[in-house]
Length: 231
Ligand code: ADE
Image (tube, rainbow, N blue to C red; front, side, top):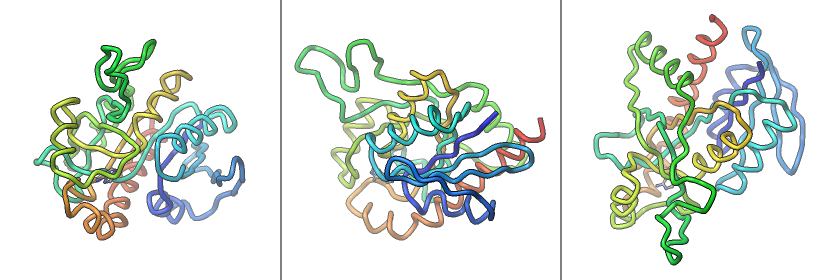
């Protein structure tokens, strides 16, 4: 079993690389992939750079070139559900692309022919995450994550995403990773810690909380690896 751990930004994987300490760095496709082992698990770690195209390339590379058989995404998100506060963890039950729009042809937002609005995450990884949360007494909210190539810092846009997709959080990579993993038959999981409320202060909040929230998410991923290695 080879496990991919993916983030979008350097800050999202730095806590993992610091924790593992030793790794081999392999360059491919204008990106770096970090290969290591942890408690007998083979790991490949990478950040994609922001956005759906970069995330799709990295997820595909992790699977097709590095042979990952599971993919765990770790990072930060903007809160849509007001119950989610800075640093809170959310794991996606399913994800949709909020900026995918061929409604001109009568399709719902987020839908393209032969696709689906939502892609569901792996139930075994979800169950594992819930066990870890329970054991460690960590509050882990489950919910819908909406993805698009836009940093959302606008109440109206946020409300539209909430209404249209029933979303709890939003970010810029998850749904594209979901499409890739689903197509290639690789179980995946998307974990995010809240960095902002996708409102007019989101830019400031993101800058302030990116590092701390990324660490919260990365620590949970490490706890999941402990559990996987233990099984
Ligand atoms: N990731 C974290 N916060 C975000 C926001 N407000 N919009 C898009 N992606 C994000």
